[in-house]
Amino acid sequence: LGFALPLWLGAALGAGGVVVSVAGLREDAEDRRLMMRHTLAALLDVIPPALAAGAGVEQAITNAASIADGWAAERIRGALNRARITRVPLWQPLRHLGETTGVVQLEQLAGTLQLAAGEGTRIREALTQRGEALSERLTAEMEARAEAATERMSIPLMALTSVFLLFLIYPALAALKG
Image: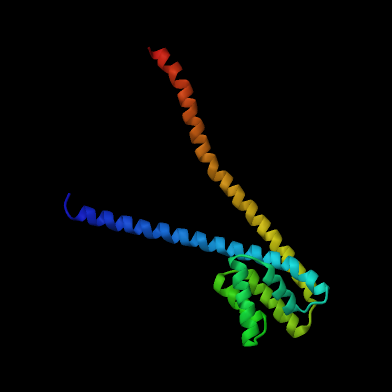
């Protein structure tokens, strides 16, 4: 065989392993972003009623984040705690979290909170609209993923059906030949 073939084969398999692992990491990161968007949508459903009940923006967001569960809620709570401890506006750590995780909706929420703090806009309606828009987008993404999964499953199903038909037709063809 020589020395070159195992060397090239090892290099090709190594490159293939890197490609597969990077694709897996990208998929995991996208799943984490999706989890963050779902958690944010849930929080945006809870915050406007708290604001309507008389809570302040910071209190409403902190209370909503405290009842949420999961990895994304932990990250949001950490950002809110960082804002409280360092005495910076609430929107700064949320924007930073959005930038580091790649979740644009967090950055948009931070922009809305910054606008509300600076210009006194109607925050409850703005947060309600953000929550509705995010929920609609998440629904559309979930439908697209389900449709893509259905399309991916059609090819193996067609192959399985073809093999099944081949097994059904083979005895008849063998009887005709013999």
